[in-house]
Length: 213
Image 1 (cartoon, rainbow, N blue to C red):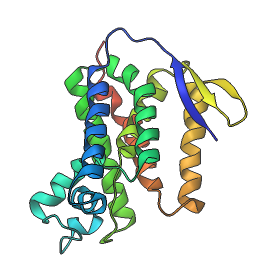
Image 2 (image 1 turned 90 degrees about the vertical axis):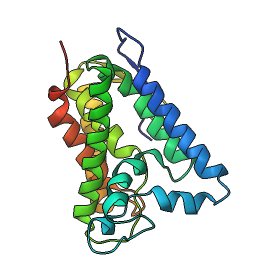
Image 3 (image 1 turned 135 degrees about the vertical axis):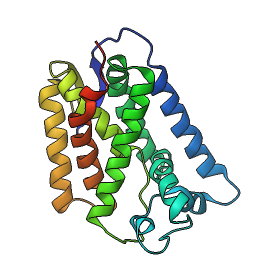
């Protein structure tokens, strides 16, 4: 167990975009759950499929418009309560500070771009696969990558199953990243480890393009 539950890093303004992203994710998940079509059907419609970038749709969406739409829509769908719960927890802890260092529009664009990069990495790893990708994990990982270099000395409170501890961001986030890399080679097949890795790297590389003084 290696779960952050808060940080010691106050912001200078309200995290409006982060709050709206969390609200949008929760609303989308409610739609998945309560839609008359059923959870699986709705999830399949808005998921991203690597095959949708090649010949054939690989899913319910069309290749042209649908594959582009799914590169964004997949970020707002989740596979279950635990999935969305952890993603939103990470987004709330780290997103408010990253948003604080960017314009609101820039932060939103940064979030979407890292999420798209995460999906494309999944497609490169599994070209032509008819396997759905859902979840905000890739975009949230991008936020984590930015946070590492923006606030390396910030203290993160981490739950370690039987105890809690405080860690500097420059320790916690690299450990988290290495766990994703190890998962790529021996973790659960149901987790898109490559998307986490790609999103994190994209966030670390691109954040300076969006930060403001």
